[in-house]
Length: 232
Ligand SMILES: [Zn+2]
Image 1 (cartoon, rainbow, N blue to C red):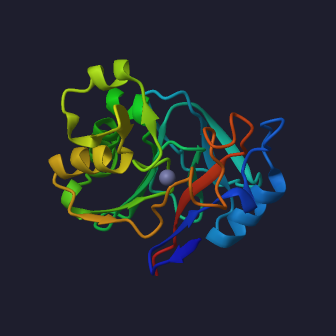
Image 2: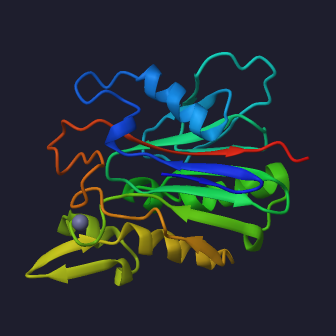
């Protein structure tokens, strides 16, 4: 699913354009190039994601010939570079895209439970403010496909780590985590009002998505990305 706006383009991919191969977990360059075409992007910046709260800044580059540039270890990317996309790789964790409508800057965030609890959302908003002067009230946020509360069972010891249980649903003695609700609460606390959920669906029970849980570790990876257009 690609959405086009005057100032930016977003992409919420599933298994059809898996960014990593289900067996080898190698990067699929053909798919990366196809996604770049959808986004009108000359290259895509990606990170070695480790469920941390580390935010990486995609540098300004003039020679963008490679379909993918790996930036190193981290779980959110921010940029104000036009015509180069930033992407997040997932297979059940929640991906977020953020667009700063005032400063023409963007972020892509890997907001699975570990990173979210570690503060990746707060850190991304802070880095956007430091780098581009972003005010959270000017952000347009998109929630991407993830394991949702209908399916995402979590263990009791995870629930015990949470300071607030409003994102946990208890059914038949089991706990289910609501990743979109958890991230939304964090975003709202910073003053974000515009949160778009058109691309949000459950990777575990909706077909067409890679799901680590549903495919028992043999899944490819979904790509969620944003590309800033050149402002005329
Ligand atoms: Zn589900």
